[in-house]
Figure (tube, rainbow, N blue to C red):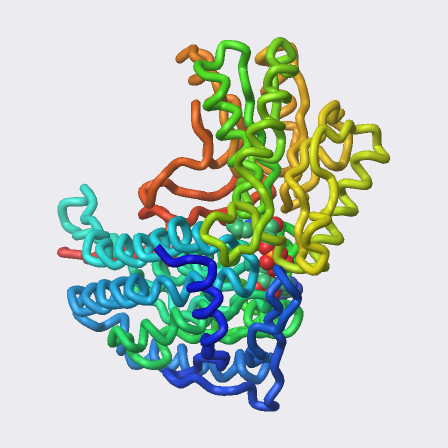
Length: 497
Ligand code: NAD
């Protein structure tokens, strides 16, 4: 296993590719514009990444459109496409250390998390959708005797993907892999805070034998490149992971342009319900702690609302504070022992600290954390934070903070727990902790969330559709449901009369 010194040496020698990937080539922006990628652990500039705008989006969409029109990808024999996806996954796996390092340097994720969580999942995602290419079949229906009715599935065309910075490569891959597996051509606009791994991802696709123009990457700001992509008239679909506010804007852009399909994976404020009969308090507390402090709480489905039965609330709180201190000490994200890195940027740190001030001012009680890390003033750190006595109406208990801030609310009855859990504009995920099977099933039915966990939180694999109810989104990543979301059905009725 590599040490901190090994990773520091690798980081010092890293010369990341910084261009836009358009039509199979890595190119600078037309006007030479760049955006700095800042390491949030210490404020140093990791690289200057090319910054595209409307012009580069036009070029990338034109390239994807040409690839779509001549069928160089969608008409390829399925087994050949599968072989390319397999080689692509193998190359990503072989380059996992370099890709993990790019994530850590760009957005502060602990290197061990990048290596053991993000990268393996990226590889599995590409393999899963690659393997699925020839597994989606159409059907012939039981129809009139003098007709044959077939339903076939076709790719959509050029798909635009816009991704966030919290799991830069993984969130991009959850979009790009199924879109490509379905036979589409793709233009990806990664987050301008952490685009370097996506650039490598596209290069590795080309190295694996992926045809030029099929997978393009244009880094740039949301307001310029992202908006230009979402408004583009030649896109059949825009697929997005990011905030609810931007998701709403994308729906508007689609309506203003060509009514392209819009699939959204957006924000959350996920409740975890701890019933008094839960099977193992220590295990539940550990999941609660990991559920909010992993990745610094910068997780869409972070378990940020802890709904704890009043009979166990005091014991739960004491164990939570102790476990958080044991598991999440801030550190240099390049140190393999670190579990809590900085937040993505100083600007985001300021936002999270403002939320904490607001919570205290509103009357919630700070049980731990609540400040930057005094030992690391140069980094964008926030200590693991727990608020007690959070009233249901308080903004900190309702809005997505996207940082290491948990809010604990108590309840007296199952009905009250469900009411509190569902009293949200979001509905991404939820969990229930109970020993009673009937309670668990009742709650699964009652909870308004796209994912419900019982006696665990955050567990799952690629077969699990992932996405939200309500303002957490309108589609699903992962699973075959995601793959078919990048296809459209065609019904052909053949008269035999
Ligand atoms: P964000 O919405 O600020 O940005 C996401 C992407 O959208 C970035 O690439 C950004 O450049 C782009 N963008 C911004 N404004 C745009 C505009 N007007 N037009 C087009 N594109 C625009 O989100 P973020 O801060 O990068 O990520 C955090 C958010 O992502 C959180 O709300 C989190 O819950 C959400 N998220 C959701 C999921 C999920 O699966 N539901 C997964 C991860 C993150």
